[in-house]
Length: 92
Image (tube, rainbow, N blue to C red; front, side, top):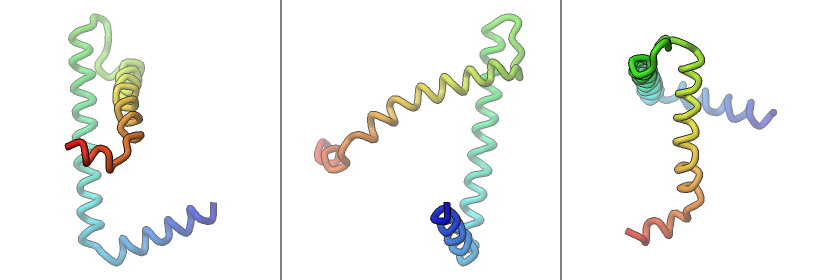
């Protein structure tokens, strides 16, 4: 736990030392979060149009879509994390 606190303190010090990078990082995170939420609600609306009796803001539908997206991205990411980078670079 103390290592985590030391790492957090170090990260905060580094962010204070480079305000330009900090601003760029915060803006990138905010834009990504907004874009992700808009896409998620748009996808929920599309699912609601496909299924009768489902509200686009129904938490169950939203959770199901999030779970499907997590599983769909988990397996390729897990498989690619097991590849040796040097082997992948030599393959090209």
